Amino acid sequence: MKHFFAFQERGTTYKQETLAGITTFLSMAYILVVNPIILSQSGMDKGAVFTATALSAIIGSLLIGLLANYPIGIAPSMGLNTFFTFSVCIGMGIPWQTALTGVFISGVLFVILSLLKIREMIINVIPQDLKHAIAGGIGFFVAFIGLKNAGIITANEGTFIGIGDLHSPTVLLAIFGFVVTVIMMMRGIGGAIFYGMAIATVVGMIAGLIRVPHEIIGGIPSLSPTFGVVFSHLHSIFTPEMLAVIFTFLFVAFFDTAGALIAIASQAGLVKDNKIPNAGKALLADSSSTVVGAVLGTSTTAAMVESTAGIAAGGRTGFTSIVISALFAVALFFSPLLSVITAEVTAPALIIVGALMATQIKHIRWDRVEVTIPAFVTIIMMPLTSSVASGIALGFILYPIAMLAKGQAKEVHPLLYVLFAAFLAYFIYL
Image 1 (cartoon, one colour):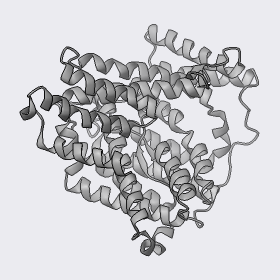
Image 2: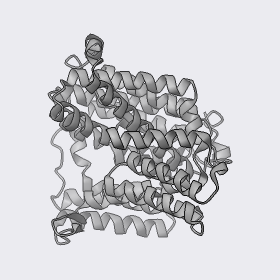
Image 3: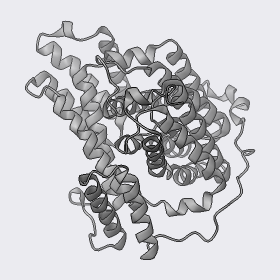
């Protein structure tokens, strides 16, 4: 087992990988609660979506761990489930069955692109500076999510965002968890992020801020309302509206996962010679889980940026993903315990992980203006648009323009000009 996952080469242990897997699972387990709530608003059965969410996370995390040996958790994407419900189903009036079929088709296209190594090729031609910008930008985005989930920052009519209510007990719980975790990290305690979440949970229960579950084991909801629905609605996707929807699923999921993969691989120290080892296998695992998830009854899956919490806790191999997969399997039977995992508990982990990821920007060549502008826009637009894909797209539009203006067109890979045109068309028409 140690040889298969290359423990020695990556400097890790069973304990380190297990703690990392637990940490990532706790950071992303909210998806089991949130995804059914969001998708049920499109008319889908909440219980079936819960089971489909868990199963797609089990299969996706298992695949990426075994095929690519990456410490990544895969689950339904938060951005794409909201797009599915509020833009496609509610906004465009498309039935959820048809929208789910669109997810299935985009997943099949993902698989084809992955097998042809087109996705891997695109990732590998991204300039090193933009890779660091993507990783750093996701760090700021993750920290922003953590601050928002903690209630430390909130919406503000005058300034868009502002400081939250620092007297709120739940906000104070998040701050307590953050401080405890930082202290343990400064003292060199391994697994500090995981222990910080555990301590905050116990304190929250004692203070009455987190509900103590009255039961432990619950039944697994049936998949029958959603399972296999996509196969009976394939005829309904051949409309201009649905083709646009499929393209959007394809575009956003492609670059959400690419961005997360770059960030996670960079943080784990796996990037070599500006290339990500086994990127093709990682992308194949991700795209395959989208196909399976659509058949089961959930929206597009993606590599979860919360996986960076596990990286920070020491995860370096696919064994971390195996632990994540196993815990999602356990969660199927212990759904009442999920109420223990609150946003305030996981927020400190996201803030700290964001800070660690943001250190990638030190490698950007800030003294070159043709690099500075695209890199800065990539970084800043991720948290401001709440979209990894939008940040990447804007950076990819500006980079060729800046290089051409600087007279360095030959340094730009031809494929980047193709992406420039694709991203420009995306913003203009979609």
